[in-house]
Amino acid sequence: MTTEKIIDAHHHLWAPQSDPGTVGYVWLRDIGAPKPFGDPTPIQRDYLLPEFLAEPAPDRLAGSVHVQCDPKISDPAAETAFIQGISNTAGHPIMIVGFADLSRSEVAETIKCHQAYPNLRGVRQIISHLPDRPDISFASANLLEDLTWRANFAILADAGLSFDVQLYPEQMQQAAEFLAQHPAVPAVIDHLGSPYDASDAGLQRWEDGMTALAALPHVHVKLGGYAMYFGSDLGSVPAQLTQRALQLFGASRVMFSSNFPVDSLHLTYPDLLAFVRAQMPRADHAQVFHDTAAKFYRFAC
Image (cartoon, rainbow, N blue to C red):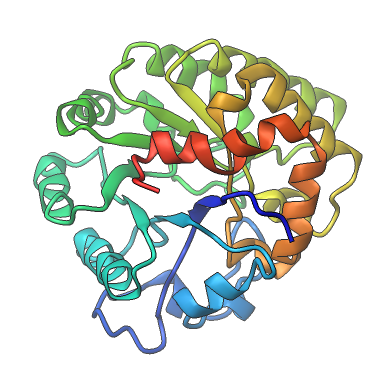
């Protein structure tokens, strides 16, 4: 067991079976419907804090970040309220990234409702879209080209919130140009930039896009989501991309994330920790596993 402090910068808690917070989950109750990351059936059940905190054993978490899990919830702030209650009751610090549809005219009111909960730190609206790959697209259109979405992004700066960016490498150059216009909105690339295409051309697109994003000092990256794109294979390609992300962004802009329970479809938490630790010198561990996330998401721990 290590003695380093760990903040998991990206996980999910949900309760589609019991739904004690009356959140009203949608995709988690749609059993049998495939997702871009595969068959979610084994995780379409309650996944709550005690189970999550047991995953890293013998390591322990000093804190964690819950990222919105269902954009079809009728009241996105209900999810934030649910997670705030869990954090308050358990005494485990969980910072919250809520959902808000920036393409809607009433998004400012949605964000205001989220802000009633003190652990809210940011917003995520998945923008992953490939026009010729609807099977793996999370968004039905390229939101980076939506004028309302682009205009509403500035609301995040006024609200003091960050933005979690989940996108594909094909979108990175355009995203970098857009994010450069919003230096007051801290941003973090989810899931290592979603490297779904491990061909030479696909890896080059990832390299070019991540280089453009890394040139922006307010943009960070999460090491996680490996199982979504590599399954149980933690071999040479994920290792290469992890090491390259560290080179491009530097440890002060890189944070560890598990993406549990999604990544639990293929990986154990201890194996994930061991893999990420092996990709960097020991001197970088404190920043990647704790300090970067603590600063970005404003933890007290």
